[in-house]
Image (tube, rainbow, N blue to C red; front, side, top):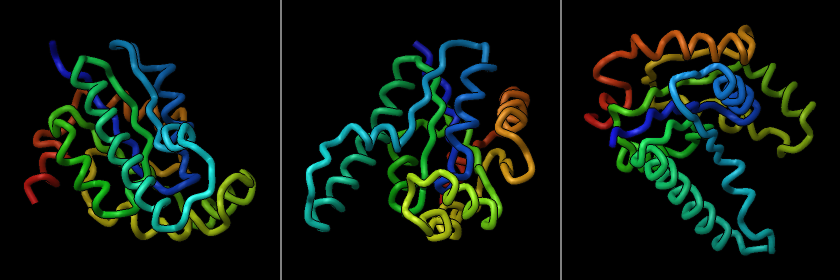
Length: 181
């Protein structure tokens, strides 16, 4: 059984990853795709209050489990659109460890800081300043197969760019290059 394709969208909170993922599910026609979002995965855990130490440990385990669920879905042949925030270096390292690098199309989802702040305020469901805090962290590794900017391009246009790019994806992939570092 061939491994499934992983389209991995990385960007700050409110950058448009989920909107792009929804558009991709509508236009990709080379199989069944699943949208796996770290926010959705995290929303399934208990909401009882935890100490800061216990919460940090739970969040780390949750993210590690999320990475392994991506790998498991792709391993059995499912195509996956991942919506993630790689704001801590260990998250990328863990993904590089558990995901097949040749199966991953790594997409940087960028957005201007002013637009992120505007979107975050309009959403009202994120802590104020979260996107600004993540802004310099999520793209620090500096290597993608493809990038899009949602402050100048709509989610539908970004999805179309990704779909058009898939057949011309570079070899080695960004994940292969990053793993080699």
